[in-house]
Length: 520
Ligand SMILES: C[S@@+](CC[C@H](N)C(=O)[O-])C[C@H]1O[C@@H](n2cnc3c(N)ncnc32)[C@H](O)[C@@H]1O
Image (cartoon, rainbow, N blue to C red; front, top):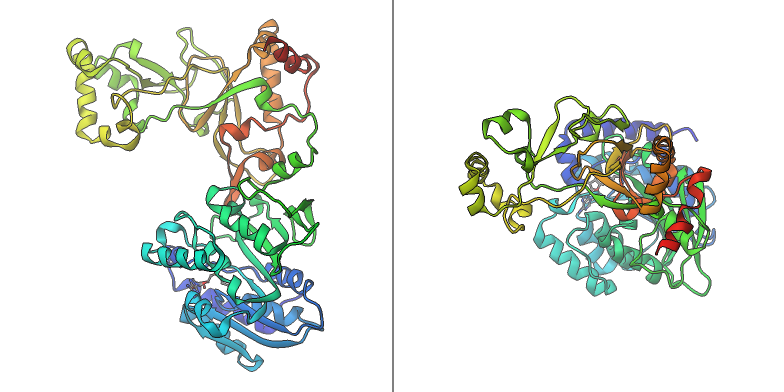
């Protein structure tokens, strides 16, 4: 539906206020507004859950300039409105709503939402709530406020919120007291709560204390907010205890009304300790069947975390200056973005055929031996100490601060993190490594299991074939197993890469899993 004249004016005024603020200021206060089209879809989706017989008491907490209220005005149709309230702490935004909606009996309060939620007169007052709460990260929340809100959530709902939670978690959970029985709420919030540990209290609340109706997760490749790096979802629930056979819709990609993928998921007995993802729900349903996953064929280990790459990863000039012996040096790959080829060829000495090879300083001799026998290396280590590197968290946790984790070179590598370009291509790249180079923790090492290794050795052409197969795994599959941040940024942990399924296996690989089972 075309935005009304009032909506066009609201949007213009909101941009004017946005421009008066720095990006940092807007980050700290979580001031990124919702596109009108999206707000309309969320309001329409929520209104559909309210019977026409129930007049609407609407609340937009974190009002901004009132995009959800503006959407409500267009979507309300046959529903009657009893009252509508918006709460916003920033007067500059609140003023826009006051000015534009003054004739609509819309009450705009310039107030702190948490104070509003605590006022006894607001208990059970609203049967429709739609908003996009501020995405303020935990380190921008004062610890005294965190504690105060944690106690409030615990008193109200018996849930323990982690200090790592963003402000939106408190917004959602503390809205419980404001909602009337059977009231409907929809929140546009970061998807992270679906899979991080600190999201558990919210998953718990949604599956036990209210009836979750739907979660629509947007495809992070099509971010909802141009200016905030966050991947978001819309959570809709009804304030009623779930009963019997309750289920909710989990959808992904596309739009709320036309998602790319949809699952119906049981709500009762849902384990909030588990991640909520397509992969998990499909596994529960046994939908995945016999899938061949990366973990069937490879042992996976994260690359080396040195704690001070700028010191431990050195070039030939430093090696020469300090006369560091070759036996303490391991060739190491640069960041994936500097690797232009998926196949890393080797020089005769095992170093990778790339520009400007660097080395990891990896000496496991105790300090007194280094001091006595390798004065050049000792001098270099002392220069690191002078910079305080030995006190850094990772270095300080080692027996001697310059010791490195043990990693052997692996035939395959995967970049740990990547950005997809919006064309459905996977963001994580795989590499075939013929060199003796190892990698830092921006990569995952993939070591072929013995049965696979013997098949690869039988016919080395298979190595590249397998590489191409892994690089052809589509983005959707990464979405199932990994985590995605806004702006198409994806990360895959070793445990998640294990679950990544191949789309198709060549004949020669088909017997590998059985063969491995026989070997065990
Ligand atoms: C993400 S914006 C959303 C604005 C609007 N609802 C929308 O969707 O476009 C969040 C708004 O919450 C406001 N806000 C942040 N903390 C608040 C608090 N404690 N009480 C009330 N408003 C708050 C910010 O000033 C910001 O305008």
